[in-house]
Image 1 (tube, rainbow, N blue to C red):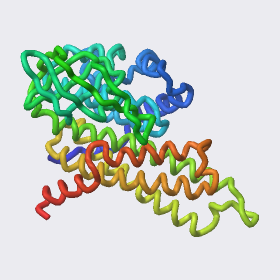
Image 2 (image 1 turned 135 degrees about the horizontal axis):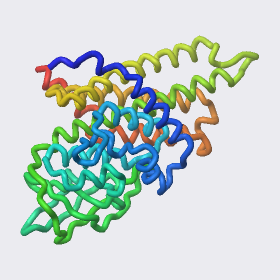
Image 3 (image 1 turned 90 degrees about the vertical axis):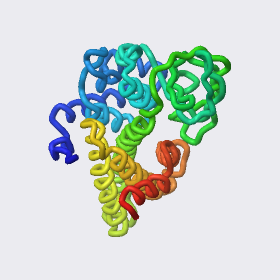
Image 4 (image 1 turned 180 degrees about the vertical axis):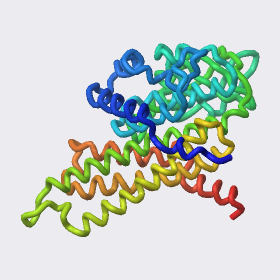
Amino acid sequence: MLIDPALLTETAEQRELRAVTRDFFAAHEADGSLWKRMAAELGVQGLAIPEEHGGAGYSFAELAVVLEEAGRALCAPRLLPTVVLAAHTLLLSGDERYLPAIADGTLTATVAFDGDVQARDGTLSGSADFVLDGADADLILVRAGDRLYACEAVPGTPLRVLDETRPQARLEFRGTPATPIGSADVVPRVLDIGRAALAAEQLGGIGHALDATVSYVQQRRQFGRPIGSFQAVKHRLAALLVEYEAARSAAAYAIACVATGSPELPVAAAAAATVCTGAYRLAVAEYVQLHGGTGFTWEHPAHRYVRRARADEVLFGTTQDHSAFLAAAWGL
C-alpha cells in the first residue's frame, strides 16, 4: 500500500497546532494541573478520537504533532499511555465506553500487556511491572491470556526508573473485578502505534538538543571567536542534522501508516524505532559534550534528555529487536 506523499508533509493547520502547543508547554509547568489545562485549553486528549466518541475527529498525524512537542519539552507523559496506547486499544477493540471520558480529559488510562495476569470468574490475579503511569491511572487495560480486560485503578508501587519524567509502576491484581473488552489480537498493532508515537516524541527531543546546542556554540567564545565557527564543531552538528532529517522521514512514514491504517505499519514502526532511537542517542551525546562542563551539571537540562533517550531505547523493544524484525521481514 503506497502512502500519499502529501501525508508526509506538514499542513498549515498542523503548523498552527505545533506553534500553539509549543507556546502552551513553554508557558506551563509540568505539574499535576497540566493534564486538565491541556484538556480545557487545547483539547489534545480527544484529537485522534472520532467525533462520535466525543473526540475532535482528527487523525493520528495531528496527535503526533502534539507528541513531538511534548517530547521537546519533556512533559505530558500521560499522553502516551492514555491517548495513544489505551485509546487505540479501545478503538481497535470496538469498545467505546471509556473513550468520551478520555477525550475530555477526565479519565486517565494505561495498559498492562506484559504482566503475569490470569482472569477467572470476572476477576484478575497476578502482577505487571513497568506499567506507564501505573500508580496514578484511573483505568487499566490488561492482557490476560488471549483476552483484554478493563479494571479500575489497583494498588501500584512506583518504580525507581532512569527517566523520572515518565513514571512507571508495578501493579498487583488480587481478585480485581474486571470487564472483558475484546481479544488480545489487537495488542501487536497497538504496540506498533506506540512505537510510531514514541518516534514522534523522540523527534521532539532531538530537535530540542540540536537547537539548544546550535544556540550555545554560536554564543560560547574561545580563542576570540564563537566555537561554532570551528570546523570540527560544524562537522559534528552537520552529522547530527543528517541523522535528525533521517529520523524525521522515518517517523513521518510510520505516523502516516497509523493515520491511514496501512498494513505496512509493523515495518514502518520498527524502522522508525531503530532510526529515531539512534538519532536521539547521538543528539543527547552532542548536547552534553558540545556544552562543555556546563552540560555535565545537574543544573543544566541536558541530563534529563539523556535519561529520556536512554530509557526510550527499551520502551517498546530494543534496537536489536527491531533490527531482527526488519531483517526477517526482508528475508535477510
